[in-house]
Amino acid sequence: MHRDLIVLGKVVAVALAVGLDVLAVSLGVGVAGLPDGAGPRVGIAFASSEIAMQVIGYVLGAGASRMLGEIAAYIGFALLASIGLLMIRSSLRNSSEATFDATTGAGLLFASLSISLDSLGVGIALPALAIPLLPLLITVSITTTAFTSIGLAFGARLGERYERNAERAAGIILVILAVLFAIERLA
Image (tube, rainbow, N blue to C red; front, side, top):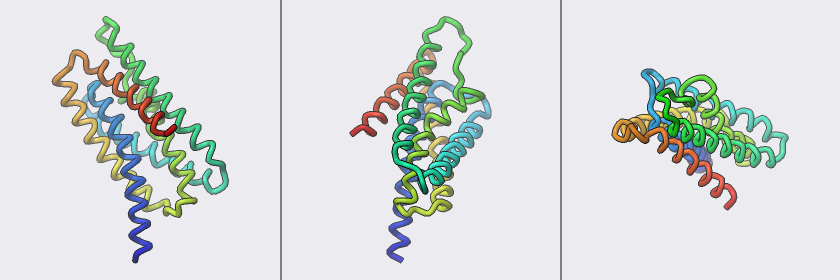
């Protein structure tokens, strides 16, 4: 019984840590504005990418080095900062047509990868932490979807209120998050 509670605590802690990362990115995407019906698509994409990367990481973690996990996290930070910079650049153009859309196609793929590459590192660590994969994946899918919905909704409300500078603010948020995540990783 005691061992089960410890494992449950580990599962919830990892799921929350991954979910908070998703919440922060979803907030930035929501501020930029969402087309109708994009929320569920973004939620599914973010949850799917988190789960896929943890499974890949788990497989690699059974026989691979920790170095790949560290490199993957920094690639994720760079992608996140790149998305933010593209959004800032798009907001500074006079054109009313946005050039970067984090809710469809390549934009959604890059956004999903930027938040899930650190999950590759988490997945690599799972065998060493004795965390069972299936309960973690179920918990991560629930928390990721919930945090995505919350972040998108809250970000959209901020975007409606400050529509003029919303895309620029979203880009700045994403760049700041990438820098903060990298600093946290280094510390």
